[in-house]
Amino acid sequence: MEFLIGSLVLVVAYAYGSLHVIRQYDRAVTFFLGRYWATKGPGLIFVPLFFAKLTRVSLRIVAMDIPPQDVITRDNVSIKVNAVLYMRVKNPEDAVIQIENYLFATSQLAQTTLRSVLGEVQLDELLADREKINAILKQIVDQRTEAWGIEVSAVEVKDVDLPPEMKRAMARQAEAERERRAKVIAAEGEFQASHKLAEAARVIGTQPAALQLRYLQTLVEIATENSSTTIFPVPIDLLTPFMDIARAAAAAGKQLPISTGVPLPGGQPEPSAVERRG
Image (cartoon, rainbow, N blue to C red; front, side, top):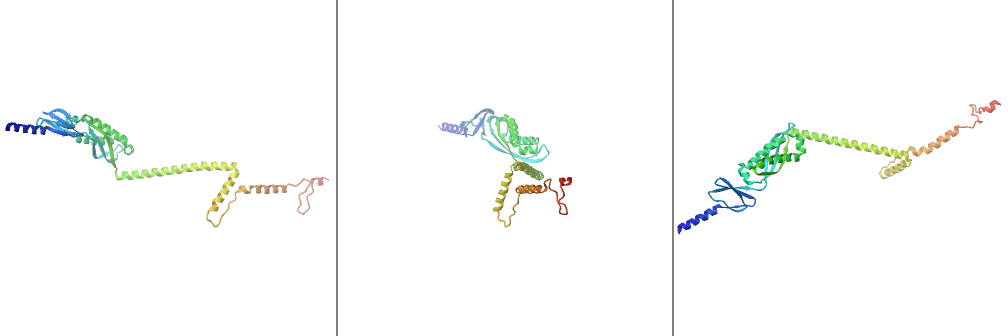
């Protein structure tokens, strides 16, 4: 009787030791007598104690930080770049059988890939087109880790640490670019203003009344200001009719009839041509 009780206790203890609870986001890669048996989970699974072993593998996405790497770009600029890699285990059995430590191996692969890819691009391309570089990094790392059962969802360049002298040079370049844009915009404004002024001059030349309206508008603007002395400019066009009348009167005074002689210096008129013939 005692033997049966003892045997029952051993069986219960063995069964209890062979039961394992696998969470929803985990999988258990089991080996029976050293051979791959099956990938089990989630839930309650039975793995014979002393005859089989299991390795838990998480299927959740892992955000892996890539330490800063010293990189020399294609245009010979020394920089430090760090990145972040997002990955998850797609095939748990390959992640356990094909590679000893898939997290460490993926981190080392990402570091070497980051240095090799950034060494083939220029600094301006790295700063301006990160999406393209991230896509290249993701493609290379994903292809290399596919045999390990790893799926890389993204590789993102986080920070680019530039040397102080390069930062100063880039600041001067940006300032020069802003000054160039300001000068171009000012020149374009002057060019457009000159065209508008030329059009206004043509309109005023064909419509003299437009100049009068502009003159009256200027007087209204001057009247609104609090000034003690106001000078009214008189356009030449306002005086043109009077000047024409004066010139006509002067011309009429010089034109005398043929029979009328021109006064002589002594006061007597010079004889006309008819009188001289008589």
